[in-house]
Amino acid sequence: MFAAAFFILSLMTCQPGVTIQEKANRRVSRAVPSSSASAVSCQLSNWSEWTDCFPCQDKKYRYRSLLQPSKFGGTICSGDVWDQASCHSPTACLRQAQCGQDFQCKETGRCLKRHLVCNGDKDCLDGSDEDDCEDVRVPEDDCSLYEPIPGSENAALGYNILTQEETQSVYDARYYGGQCETVYNGEWRELRYDPACERLYYGEDEKYFRKPYNFLKYHFEALADTRLSSELYDDARGLLSKVKNDKSVSAGVTVGVGPAGSPVTVAVGVSGSRDSSLLNELNKYNEKKYNFMRIFTKVQTAHFKMRRDKIVLDEGMLQSLMELPEQYNYGMYAKFINDYGTHYITSGSMGGVYEYILVLDREKMESLGITSRDIKSCFGGFVGIEYEYSESMTIGGKLSGERCKKSGGGDTKSDMLAMAVVDIISRVRGGSSGWGGGLTQNRSTITYRSWGRSLKYNPVVIDFEMQPIHEVLRHTTLGPLETKRQNLHQALDQYLMEFNACRCGPCFNNGEPILEGTSCRCQCPLGRKGFACEQMEQEGAKADGRWSCWSSWSACRAGTQERRRECNNPAPQNGGASCPGWKVQTRAC
Image 1: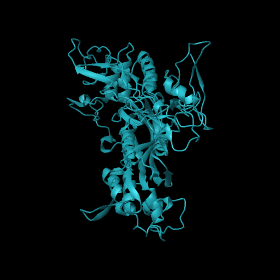
Image 2: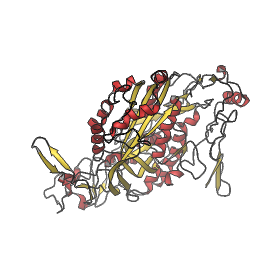
Image 3: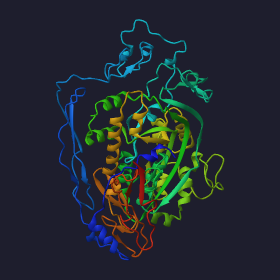
């Protein structure tokens, strides 16, 4: 679908545990004995040698590799895989290559054309291009009056596909390049009320927004949400898998499957703070008596497309890039990837996500005669979102009939708790913090719509396409960077393998392997337990297979390389589904 499809064609070898796998292959229709899930302790390599002292940072670095993540209750590793220390370099700090007749920013060494100096825009992060200006050349169409387009800082961030989290900025979202390009906001005529002056007014100051240089296109869209969807899960494993898959779809990737030439094929972990927090919340409800309901909708406010060539990098990233060694050093390049992401965004949509996870007491629902459909209705019906059914809806959004009268209107948390809802986990993204936080305590029509309106000016990136981080070096305004680009490409392949969840497992009986930092765990479906989900109440149930990690690439023969993976982590059992996708991948060499 886009260039992100090509980044994954270089993952390295990772074999699953032989002892466990051999026993899994002999398993036919009985539960795996708990003794087979032998504990595997985490192993880190020795520290590398310290790098030379970086003169612009007065710091030196070292790293250690994750040789083996802990599994099945094994000893975990402590500490980080990166380390740094202060130092003093005898070499002077040399910034970016000399700028010739152009201006050079004092702090980072960025080169600027002379017409950008003393023009009223701070094109240097430190503002040195606007220092000591006797005569500031302000253009007739003074763009300093306009605010930058909403969400520009978020679109400029890098993205880590393993943690599914944003990282530090790749694009410079504050750079305008002397241009004054504006974006029209068609909703500026909406009347506002000023309580201090007791008057209605139009938002003239929101009629136009300024578009930064790195944005090729940005279009405001009419505020519209998708139909509210609700999903019911018997266990936390199914819910977590769905959440991760939805985030991957939003990022234009396919998690864990796909043939050569297809989108990304990696098994994601949960190192990201949001997913790790969710996992910790769900772990409190591992008993059989709980179900989980996910209520979800997206609101889209704008669409954007980033510049494809002559990209101006964020000055922090520029400085880090200039300090990378020309000679390959995995630790230094992996630290760069960890800071700035495995990928960068090329286009996408702005808006917000309305998402709640309800923990349901199954026994209480049965005793009250309440169904999951009732709970969905009472939880979200009054906020005015379109439903798949509407026979019990009134114009005002409230529900008529007996559904909500059993335990109140569902407007408050106490109402929901009385309807067998044990806990409500909010995962709302976007909008002003006041209205977004208010949704947790007061899910009323007014609160929901106020949150929706605030998305126009406080959006997050909700859907996007991306490219591997090394590709951005092909399209910058900098000089030749091919050596560093190749080093970054090599490091990305190694990084994606080192922190890939395919190193975990095997998790039996449809368990979900999760790599959390340097530790693996198996999220077990309902009725399974044990470190490897090897213990089950009902023997002979179908169990799907999972892929091993990819092997290393073969030697180049006739212009082609190949690599392989096996559907044995674990293999399918008792008629379970085989692994989707191809067993062999090839690439030109």
